[in-house]
Every structure is written in C-alpha cells, then in structure tokens.
Image 1 (cartoon, rainbow, N blue to C red):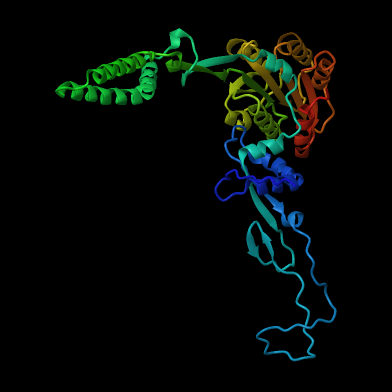
Image 2 (image 1 turned 45 degrees about the horizontal axis):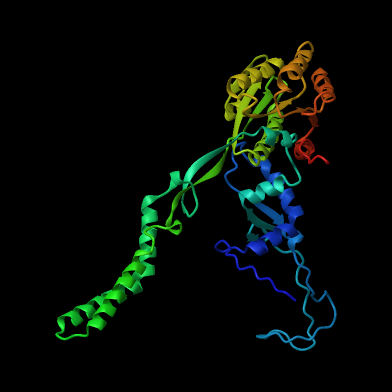
Length: 423
C-alpha cells in the first residue's frame, strides 16, 4: 500500500490540512455564519477575512461516559468527609456556559457556547460565492482585452542574432577554451622547459631535441585547433512576455432615495450591493463602482452619501437611467469595459415615467450591459415599474428582476440571480 506524506510548509502556528478538513466538515455552519456576517461590512471593505462563531454543540465530538444513577465504587483521594455507605447528594443542575470565549456562570442555568473561528479573505469569498457564476461570462471572456508586457528574463542558449549578448558569449568562450586546453598548456610548458635544458646542455642528443621540438609543435597545433568561439558559447538576451490583463468592469449602483425609501429599505439595498461588489471583484481585478441616487433628479455620489444622505423627494426613475447612459458613454466604452448595473427601488414611480424607463433599457442600456439586475424591496403589491421591467425579460436574457420583502431574502435572491446556468 502506497503512503503519501504532505511535507509542504504550513503558515506559522497553523495546520493547512487540518484547517481545510475542519472547513469541509463544518461547511454548513460556516457558510451560515459567513452569510450572516456579510451584512456588517462596507461595500468596499474586502481587504480582510472574517471572524465567525460556531455554536460548540455543532462541533462537539461524541463521547462515552457513565450515565446518572447506578451503583459505583470509587476511591477519591483526600477524602476526609465520607465513609463507606454514605450517600452523596447529586450535584446541583445547571451551570455556567462559556460564551464567545468567556467562561461566565449563569444563574438561570443557561449559557451560549461559541467557537470563534478566523477565516481568511480567500476562504471567506470562496464560501460566500460557492456554486455561483456571472451571467454571460463567456461573452465577457471573448471581449476581454489582453495586453502583453515584455521584460528581461535572464539569458538563454537559443535566440536570434539581434539579441546576442557579446560579453556573456565571450565569457563562456574563455571558460570553454580554458577547460579544453589547460592540460595541453601544462604539457607545453613542461616540454619547452625540457627543450631549453637540452639546448643548454653541451653534447646533447640532437635526435631528442628534434623529437621534443616536434612534440611542442604538435601541442601548439592541437591548442590552436580549439575554436575561439563556438555555438555552444553563444548567449542571448532572453525576453519574456507577461500577460497584463486589461479586462475591467464597472458596476453602476442605482438607488431610489425618494420619500418612500426609509433607512431600513436602504440598508437592505446596501447588503445586496455588498454581495454584488464582492462577487465582481473575484472576476475582475480592475473594478470601478459608480453610485447614482435619484428622486426626481439623479446625481452621481460617493458611497457614504449614496447610503446615508437624508435628501428625499418625488420619484422619477428614468433620471437615473439617463445619467447612467451619459456616464457610460463618456467614461466607459462598451468595447473596453464590462458593464454591470444593479438597481434597487421600492417600486414607486410616476406612471407616465415607467414606459420611458422601459424604452431607455430596451434601446440604450441593455444592448451594452453584461447584466442588469433590478431588485424591488417592498411588502406592497407590484406597480407599473415592475411590470415594465418584467416584460423586458422575454426579450433580453441579460436582465433579471427579483423581489425582496425582508433582510432574510437578500442572500437567497442574490444566489438566484447569479446561480450557475445548466449547460
């Protein structure tokens, strides 16, 4: 039987194998805690993980222990109060519970035990958006612009003459010639010294002198035959290309801030936008967010004003769609940007304005956006705006409308909007 041992280094104080095993084992509880924790975040606050807590009753291990009652014989060390046959009273029921890491007793016999678990940003996003995908992603990939940046990547033995590195090639040539002729040069020095001695010795054998001279000449020829430079010596500057993805996306957040949109409704819209922002950042490295709030007039604002400004008024939804079109045409060409839009409203709109909204979407916006999602946050019956948007779904596959009644509906609605499509 083969044994596989994982010897990869783990982070300090952590066990990667055990950590992944824990996440997989208690994924249901962790995913529930993650979905609850997302509501506490800012839209752009994605630079950290999340500290979540799991009830210890969900992670407790089964154990064997003796039940209450029965006859037991035990020896307790330090016993100075009881003798054989004495009846020991049952301990009082209840007790303290440990909540969030603090072992505080409870006089009511109740406690809340939590296991606090820290997950990283990647683990957080992986659990939050598991089994989800961007609609029309295949079209996005076809329209992504990919640029390549050339950079120096050392040296290589193969290349074109224009990239030859002379210094490196000569250095390699010297090393090769030195290695190939070092022994021959030592022999040549020894023979030259021997010839000099023979020539300085009176009455030396002339045949030996001639033989030494011939051997010296032969060694010189062998040394000269070593080429000054060989193809093996050539070194070329190596240039590699790295992909610089220029794929970029813009997310338009449109929100109705008329008098009928109270703070609770805005908070639910904020939670939806948080999920959408986190989801898009997993696909696009360069993501910009454009916030547009409107009542009778639309205005581009920052995040804080988008959610917390107290300005209110009547409702003309088409003003936001017109402003979105103007911004998109000026700053975000559809051939360079992947455009997404999310609109949140309580459904109130002037009856005469709803057909105008449909025409703007039908002729101007839906042909250029990748996905347009409309969420209506209300407990009332749907009005004209919902019906106009709903009618566009039969004509376009890149628009979706969903209804949110309470905060618990946000995450299920989001998953419905971005669920994986069956092939």
